[in-house]
Image (cartoon, rainbow over all chains, first blue to last red; front, side, top):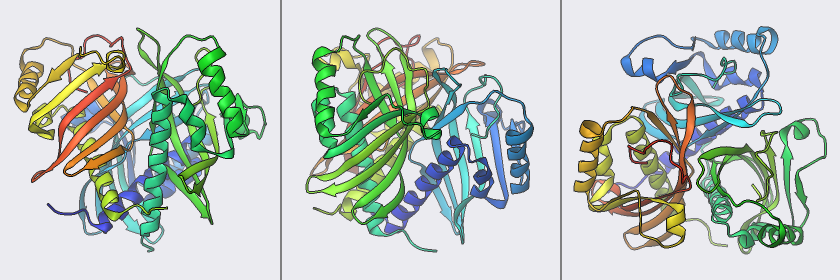
Length: 162
Length: 162
Length: 162
């Protein structure tokens, strides 16, 4: 039996805090903070599980840099006409899959709930974050975050990132 | 890069265990245990996000001492006529926002599911706990727990604390 | 005040990782991996809260060895006619209830969401895992996992383990 190292406990803590901060930024609609969770050439992909499982490339969102994410945020906040809604992320403790030098591979299950004005809260999008995380001078950041969602029929259109 | 201290890991653990014990007391309907999670002059507030975001004071529940909480528990268990239901809390790992001497500021996203007899489980109330926690001889306790819920339209009336 | 020991932090980490790996195996439909989370004479029980609370023995599933679990997996994958669906587990950080020698008693709240092809995601089964965990040369394993679910009216039939 190999004891869990202090380094591993620290890493687990940092990853869970990263997920909590990420959720908090989105749920509080601080969308400008969202691209900052990624490295400059980071990638954000939102893909249906059906496509992921079959190795098909089609994704609902696939943003290949922080610049593209900022563009998406501009769209959300300035140009895309949509009915507003609240989101609420509940994320399980992350599962650390591997550490290769500076790169940490993790995954975590998530449920996002949506609430429209004067409405009840609904299950909106559930799935799994599959992440590559790197350490930077400003702390852990996503090199890539792939959200594989089970929910094939998305309630209305999905506007905000998950 | 600053390593996470052992003290911080211990604190994170204690906060998550506090949330788990709190959820467990409510979900198992051990309501008498609920005020004991707070200090004597602790505060429990349940407020709609819409009001919280606008700085409006109106709250669905606002109990300013353990005594008021005990009164509420008496109401739940003895006097308020209501159809019984089960609750089930799923709480994300907490996000530690700051430590100031004895005071710890944290927040955590939660989802509460409700099940009525012979019914399916439903999303009941989702939101964010915003907490001030202090250390006492009996362990961590809430000086204040503010539940900011997204769910503006609450399924039937909300009887039990969240 | 007694500080949390490093051993306790390590144990908490291991238990949460066990739950994450368990969820991952089921959600990814790697059902063959499921019995391996238990010791050879481990027990898996899925019981309605109503029966659990009253001390009644009736359970929806009660498998008393890894062999019975393998049989169930064979049923799921080969013989039980059912419409396929995805599951997604979101599990709170576990609450460690006690450590007695090699035996660890823990519980954790869970929510399982179900998604049918081309359907929206729904709350499927919520409840509490009540576990007895032992340390083996291959890591932590369940001596028993009792899933006490709130959801008395189960959406369609429950095919996969929770």
